[in-house]
Image (cartoon, rainbow, N blue to C red):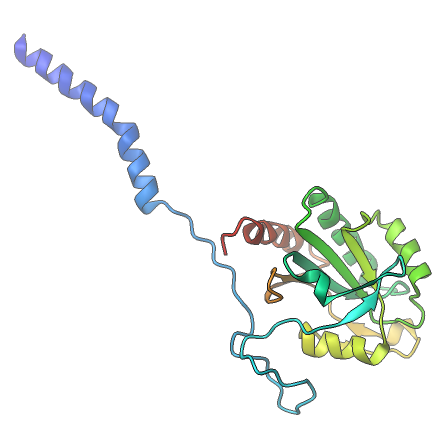
Length: 222
């Protein structure tokens, strides 16, 4: 009888220890690390010296100031301290831009209540895409004021910013919509101005990944 009671006591102790052991295991061995890359830590390839040379190896988004859909200046300075999602587009785009903007609308809605996340869409056809045109486009895609800004700036500066700042291809179509070339990528920029990810803006799964990794940055798990 005594042996039975001892055995029962040991069984009870083991049962009580199980949650503690599980906790210790998860704490010590079950930590889930999710590392986001930091792009261009050794600089960006610039063989023809078409881009300004920085003193820093780490590539940062360079300074720029364009005009948003409300006619207000906005650019690099407004990216400091915030996570920014950027794409290049133009409102008369006959192919990928409507798909990209529809996907960006999902991002806009997903982070509607998060003040530290913002979206910037930069037009590669600034001659046509005046603030008035951009404002109508913003309303079409339900852009939240102050959350999603549509920018246009000087043409030469815009293409240099795409190439040298965000490291994306872009080609001037000289007013002919079918002749413009730009990337379908959404770019994730951290609060220090570093590129942390590229995602296809025409693929729902890629945009879902963008939103997930934006949250990773937001909660400081980079």
